[in-house]
Amino acid sequence: MLRYLVRRLALTIPVLLGVATLVFALIHFIPGDPAQAMLGETAAEEDVEALRRRLGLDRPLLEQYGVFLSGIARGDLGTSLRTNEPVAQAILDRVPATLELAAAAMFVAIGVAIPLGIIAAVGRGTSVDHLATTLALMGISVPNFWLGPLLAIVFAVELGWLPVSGRGTPAHLVLPAVSLGAALAAILARMTRASLLEELREPYVQAARARGASRARAVLRHAFRNSLIPVVTLIGLQFGAVLTGAVITETIFAWPGIGRLLIQSIGFRDYPLVQGCILFIAVTYVGMNLLTDLVYGVLDPRIRYD
Image (tube, rainbow, N blue to C red; front, side, top):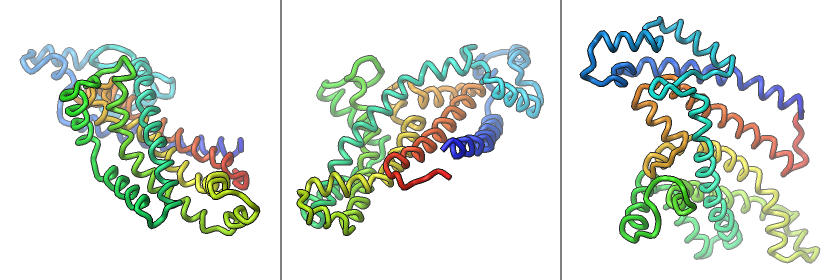
């Protein structure tokens, strides 16, 4: 296990280096001047040039790239051009909000998808199965950039049941969590159904029934446990995506997370903050993939990390 973990961690180094290089190149090739954006369109040219020199933006790109990589090696992601705040601190301040939203969205997705997938698999070919499949297809087909505003209009504006934006109370979490979790629930439900159907065909399920196990016990205790590996894979990957990629949902509901911070940073051409956010996303996604692989050994003791 330890050797496998060390090997996987070593393999992440070139991945993160590639991400850092790509992000650095793309953000510097995007049209626009951070100094001009900070001072405004009416600023004098000499003021803009003075600010560019102060921020180090007048240096050659290779020199800026070297400073960027050396800072990463020291654990220093730089300073925000807009707020003059350390990038690492700005990201850490937004992490709790993103974790909260991601956890709530996954709770919604798993709470809906797992029971729905089990019911659909057990009742294969029945009206319940067709209804569950239809709901899953609808969830996949409806994009969250449409579902989010619709939920806000209905439940916040028209009915007045929930706040439309911001963070503070559990009520603020409901709409963004449902908006983000709906599509995940649809994908998980289909995966749960397909994986469980394969296990229900296996002889050990019939053997469990022959030994006197009830249908519910045979399904939940035996078949469902063995069907969890592909489901856990999807949950791990989707949680990594939700944790770091809820850009649209956070923007719609003004949720103060990493995704909204990234959009704001791009708008202000805040190079260090954009680079820091993307690196955080990459590290989190790689970490979730590694954690998912390690969970396999818990679900299936036959898996060995040699």
